[in-house]
Amino acid sequence: MSWLQERKQFVKALLSNPAAIGAVAPSGAALAAAITESIEPRGKVLELGCGTGVFTREMLRKGVAPSSLVLVEQDSEMSSSLRTQFPEAAVLQVSAQDLSRESHPELHGIDAAICGLPLRNMSGAHHHKLLTAVFEAMRPGGSMHFFTYGVRCPISPSVLEDCGLFARRVRFVPLNLPPASVYSLSRQP
Image 1 (cartoon, rainbow, N blue to C red):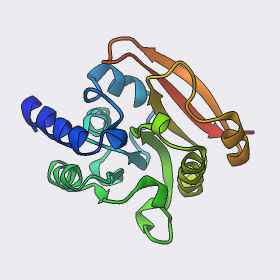
Image 2 (image 1 turned 135 degrees about the vertical axis):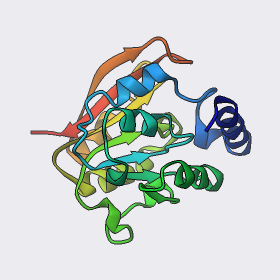
Image 3 (image 1 turned 180 degrees about the horizontal axis):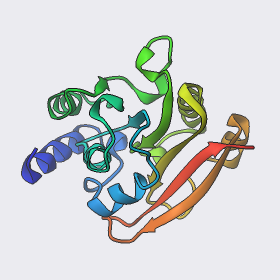
Image 4 (image 1 turned 90 degrees about the vertical axis):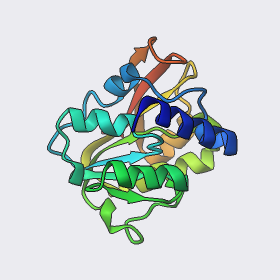
């Protein structure tokens, strides 16, 4: 997909549902490198809110096999584009809050997750449902990586505690528009 096509697709999705996009521009290369930094090439990766595929392309560049990717994107046009760009990946057109291993067997054996969803635009109940689904699908020792434009973790301490998770800020990315912080979520010991 060309730079111009990617921007057109992003703007169209932004105008049709701004709260679901939650950004003023697609994530940049510096954020893609930071959020995928700890992804192992041999693992199975779940990506939530793939958008135009910038994080997906970075994982492929780092050696993750296309067939090891489970891509979740609710927007129909973006899902269709992801299927075209990454034909070997499993692409699920579903709300991330509605994920379950029973409905989506592709979720079995996830080693890590990348989240591009606008978590600041979601309620605590949505966070809880999302995190429960992701960590039920994930193998022990797995972690979820996400970013925020805010100054602190967008997931409340009470939701983290209820889900048995620990959040840690791992990187600040000033070269993104807007600047972003990358967090890692893992199960509490």
